[in-house]
Amino acid sequence: MSQVSFAKKVGIDRSTLCRIVNGRRVPTTTELGWIAKGLGMTMDELMAGVHLPEEVVRGIAEIEAMTERALAAEQERDALRAELEQLKANIVETEAMTERALAAEQERDALRAELEQLEASMETERATVRKERVETVERHQAEFVVLRASLYEIQQAERAETEAREGAAFEQLQAVVDENLQLKGEMAELRSALQATTSKAVQLRDQVSGGLAASIGVALGVGLLGFAVGASTTRH
Image (cartoon, rainbow, N blue to C red; front, side, top):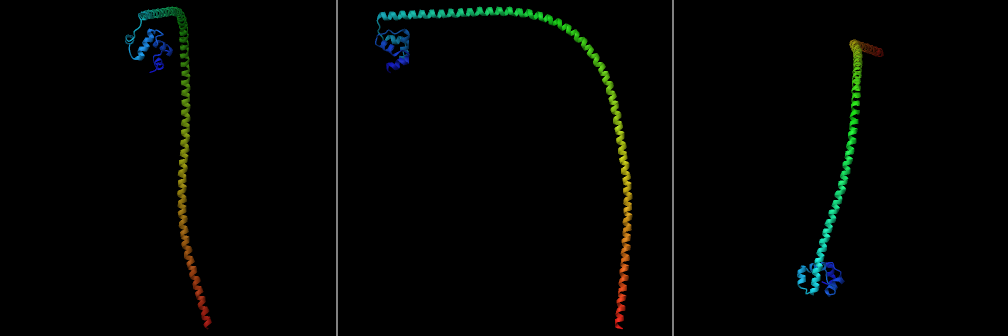
């Protein structure tokens, strides 16, 4: 693997890695950790195979100690800052809760006054409603009596009208029945007259047939007689 590829792999600038490899730059603890991780070993394993001057080793140790102290200081600072922010948030929340409590008390007092006023108004309105209800009930009762009387009159009128219509319809039906009976009698008379006429027509037909036959016989006899007389005269 080239230095360029290794530098990209461990996240160190190529020129920085080149100076570290050539001994022109002392790597930081972080850079040593990156290099060791890129080589697949621990930083102790990496340092075990490197012979550094004692000054460099002490400097690295001091740098590591300072780095640890700085990290601890930063962590403590961050913790204090977070605690301070939390404290500020608690103070703001407490102030907000206090304001909400005061507003709730004011709203409660306002609601209580409004409720008392509403109760007084409701009592007055309740009395008015009771009075109006009594008057309404009495008015409805009076209207009901009038409506019941009107309904009775309407029912009586409808009953009378229905009876009148039924009587008229019955009379019309009776007249139709009588007319049908009369028509039946007339039809019977017409049927009897038709039978009598038919009998007379048959008798006349028989008489006509008999007379016609007699006339034909007479005519035939006269004709034959005339023929015989003519023949006799011719012979003589």
